[in-house]
Length: 340
Image (cartoon, rainbow, N blue to C red; front, side, top):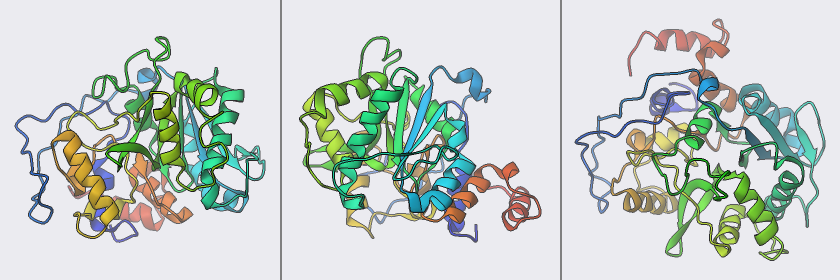
């Protein structure tokens, strides 16, 4: 816990359980008021998990993981994703400015310049490309940035959890022609959109609806960075809202923060996230922050903006991947003798 994640971030990383079923409901949990930030005391109650089973036996769906990047990030951020999590998806695509088959990168042109301020146009092209090339090969599709470390086993478990949010993620949705659009809820003008930080999930039906019914007429030439807000608006225009990915105890499974910030945030240092946390509390009726706000089935961590951070957080979660004679390996050997 002496690295970039800090002591509390280290505890949070080890709270996350890889490849388990969704948490069971917590009985007699204290429900905290939404109106006060500073006097909150973290609940020590935790949901008990179902027994572990091999992830391969749990999986019923094929998932394509796609991320957006550009050629200068190939040897750094994209390589880190390939080294750590990308190979665990059933398919992987890096939408970039240069094709590199070894890394799964495709040069994907779009309207306008390749800048962060034009992410909406890049996103439009990504979903068009997925529709043209991969729609029938996969059941679900995740899209996020190259600074997000995905716990693919947990992403798969969230997609296959049809009990926590049955209206938003019904079972056999593709077979029943029900569109599914899932992500972190960010408040906006009395409603919410799917925040792009931790990525968002579409099923096959939603991809087809987006590309054939919405994108041809929705913000076709708009140049803007807020691709998450715009794709949510386009979905909303055809009657598809951003569904919830909270677990049964109201804890978040998609979050747009790195470990240290997510573990230590108390609602008084950032207006944007203060509003987000308040909205989450209003949605679930269970206002939480810090370790208590995060589900054991977290899908990953955002804003890991340097390859060493991606590799470190991955090694902390998957200790056997780190050589025992390395700095992190030695630290894990010591930490395994302690309880958190």
